[in-house]
Image (cartoon, rainbow, N blue to C red; front, side):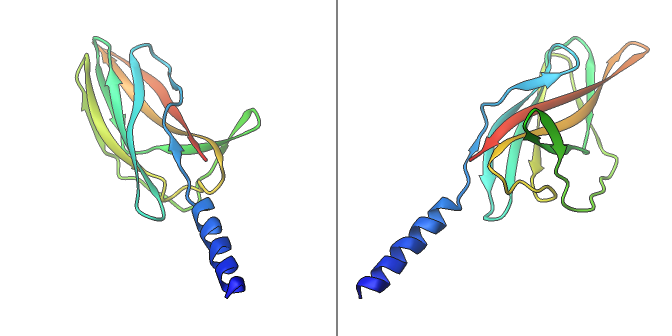
Length: 145
């Protein structure tokens, strides 16, 4: 009976150590001031994480962002692509009015987020300033522990 109890305790410790938590307090970076991402919440379906993200457009220009996104893992001082599946996106564009925001959901399903460490969700956008269109990259870091 003692042996069975010890096995149950070891199994419980192992199973609870496999549950990852996501720290969403990471830095956001953008090529243009006033454009940034904020992770509102993270849900887990038992296998993958769903990141509920807010796009902020605190500029005087219309912003367009796309369905396409990347995730990367920080190994030392370098960012490494972690795409784990052959992924294709439909060319969908979302518009955010000046001084406004828009919410978008992203999944980790196509990316290898199995390691503990720092990750970033990276996306792309355009700012429309009259006849000029400015391309930009934006990302937000998060940690899995």
